[in-house]
Image (cartoon, rainbow over all chains, first blue to last red; front, side):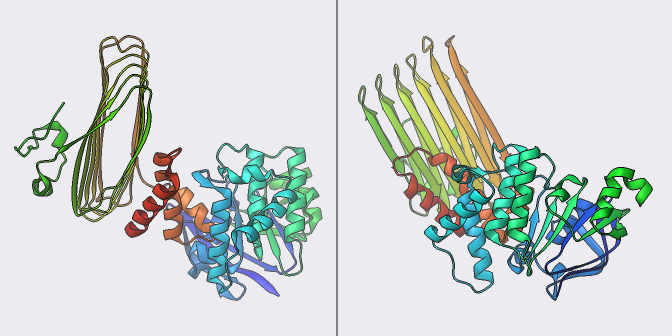
Length: 248
Length: 245
């Protein structure tokens, strides 16, 4: 089943074209890695799919589960099952993770016509997902990302993903800022939460290292705003050895 | 210290520079309410004024070692003015946590005049305002440290969040120090909601109004941290916010 279909997508930021005809098809059950040099449009791809203000689509289309993704507001995209893992998770002073995530989850459930989770049900779910990422529950009672180290922020993102249980996760450099142990924990978390027949992942990364834990089915090279090469997991190794310039 | 007079103030009077004089006229003269906390006693007060036009003037005296925790929610009226004259004797403690929430053409103001008359007293003022529409929110806060009031610890933290470009926040923290060994800090900032934060919350499924409400709720909550009636104040502030969004 086709989950995400990006066709000839063009987008600009502050009048500057970044995506110049990106096409990509992701089926349920697949993990795709998008690699590429700085400035290739990797983060822009994530933000455009997430609906971030300031990222203007100037051409092409994106269909998500048969729906026109670009016609949806960011919160509607989330309710439709899209999760965007941020390269730089944002600090929200005063708002606890627990409160934020419960409200976010229940807003999604409401949009889908489902009953809200009670406080008890939510805490049980949060505890389970926090344990998966080896995150202390006390940290989830603290304000969103405030005072978290780089690695803690990324693990907290994965806890959020586990709680929100999306169909498609677009993870923008989840591996940046992680030490070796945290990289493994995040990688295992992604597998546990997302490697399922009805889910899919788009991993945006610079490096091969995360792909040692989360084995992609496809690796794409993004350069100059479009995908210039697609291969299997071996392409990531080749990129690591030979560099983007030689391969793309 | 000012006491109520029959004469309506004018804009030349600094304390009334941003007041809605038309509304003030309807409630003038304002009787001064005296609060005297005896030596060593601990007192808590909450002021959540109601009505279309409200003006209160409190004269507070804190005897040696006395302590007052005062929380104010100034919201929901066309005109709301709270004026506080506070006098601290040796070792007294004064805490003010105040939130102002207004939209449309509401005029909300908080005018404080805190005098550290004796040594080793502390005053802590935390003011948070959320203003939308054409609302005007004002904080005029003077801290005066008298000669000999060494060991004074004074803090003013003033922040306002503007939801619309048409809203106005006035903030004027002032210090007047005649003693040597004092610690007085003031911070003041007027801003808008962080767009990155709003997108982040929405990307997790919160509709825009909910995302805003959550961030503003957290912003206002700072004024009520540690209050005996923290929960009730948070709820009242939330109701005022929801009326605004």
